[in-house]
Image 1 (cartoon, rainbow, N blue to C red):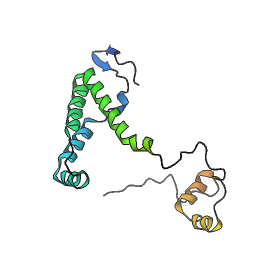
Image 2: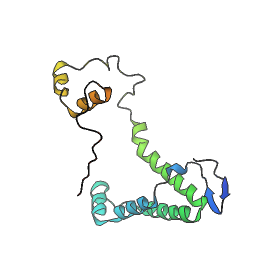
Image 3: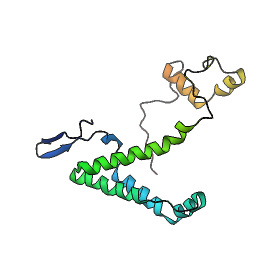
Image 4: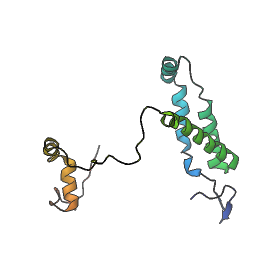
Amino acid sequence: MAGPKDNVEEDKGEKLTYVKDDWMIRRCTVYDEEYSDCTSIRARFNQYFIYGKTLDCSQWKKDSLNCYKWTENYDIKAAEELIESEKQRRRERLLPHYQNDIWVKRKTPPENWDKPLPEFLQKGYENTYLNIKAKELRGDIPPSFDTNIKFCTIL
């Protein structure tokens, strides 16, 4: 669990370091894969097609290096830079959502959101896998197979 960023504890010779918002840090291999994907020929062609230029992928490389510094050496500065990078990436991703002035956001659900479905939709839903499993979970019908049987799949 994340605590104050300056809280560093020693426990039986093992170094435990907590940084605020450390849950935002992904596995280091994810940053490596993102950098590799960003710099691939296919991605470069796609970037040029969409934006008219290639994108700067250096942030993924910096994030990868900071991630390894954090996981291997418990470098708090590297972790903080990585978390700030993740926050910036998140802000950029959500910016169009917050700038949207076309759709009016609801404060409450529509008044009839829970009314029954039309009859033709109820008939179509009657024999679906989802409906059968829901009935099994509610106990309306017995399970469709013996749950005590162990299945093995070899691919």
